[in-house]
Length: 294
Image 1 (spheres, rainbow, N blue to C red):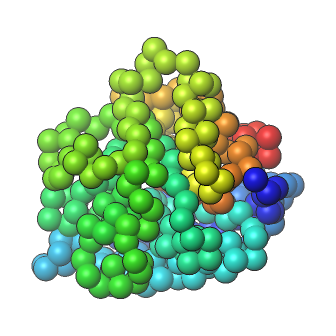
Image 2: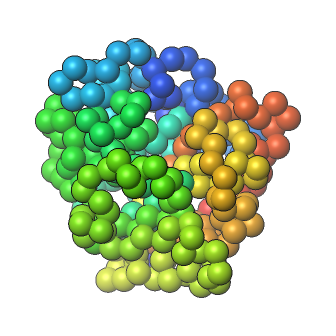
């Protein structure tokens, strides 16, 4: 497999709650904590998510803004990957993911997805309790989304379900509300949090990397910080107990982040407003620097 292109930061300052602040502030803070060494910088996207009303037809919050943002992210990621760069998207919330995957698909063709998240993100607008776009990224990428969004994303599934690996989910309420369940979607691999408690996490990470690069194609790497335990990382809006520690995440994440098969990565749901001493942001930046440049 060929050497990777340059790691290139792209901020996506959005928050699917539909108001200013929160995860919108993540890209600027995380960029400063990362520093310039080891990264090129492509600036930020411009589209924001604003609005507190759910679409009456499809249940999505601020749906028109999500359409515009998705199209912008798709175009920016397509340009970066076509130029043989490795986009490092600084969120922002998980709503950015379908556009990012679509952009990478436009220039690179087929690839896999390693999805580190405390949730499966398989809600639709009609099953989500909130209507927030961050509830839907895996579902939308598989084609379970309103037609106007599918037109913006293009052909779905953006990533074949058999080439998806979902890692770290632990929201049992979500499993009671989503339909269809992930087992019925043909998803290649699911490692729930409970599955990881007694596993050798270095070996799990290495096996994920081997599976996702089998055959010579690459993969996109998604990190939602709510995969971490709420005590380990309180600077997010979706706090849950029993998540990964930072050391556990590093063991799983490092083989993927350092892989020559990595085509892009996004880091989402960091809320600097909940990180007054910058402890969480600093640890997150150290994780990214230490693994992506490793």
